[in-house]
Length: 180
Image (tube, rainbow, N blue to C red; front, side, top):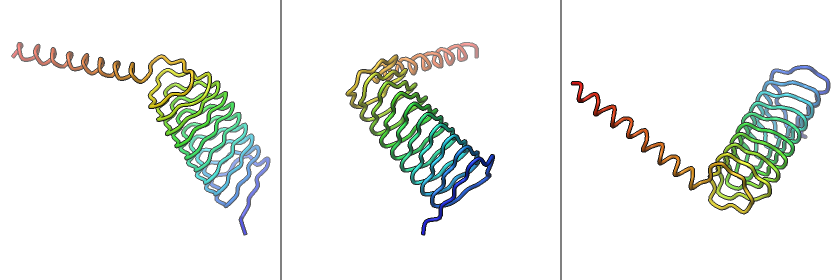
């Protein structure tokens, strides 16, 4: 029989471990469970098979399936992630679906974005509509993307930076040899 814990209107917990955990208007440091459901709650670290967070915030999540609705997350590592009207700093996943949301960095095998902004996108396949990004590194793009730096430009910028740094070191070595 599955163990289930439910915490409501409880201010703070240090560490919670169970098969199924439901939080509402709570704060917790560490959560370890198969299934975590949180609403209007805060968490420091969550490790679970499935996480559902609505109108809350979490610093770090490790999960197979992560759903975040109208919330915020720091670091998210999940096999599948779904962000809706949410924000995340760093997202790493195999499959990401981001809708009306924002993220700092997205690293994913496959990503589908709708009306979203991401600082840096690194993915093999990108799909969606109305995507805004600063840097895009993608193998295949099937979406209209507004980008400042796409894959060819990023490679060119990296090459130019490497050449510039190399020339500075070369000139520095030549100047130090002449002084000796």
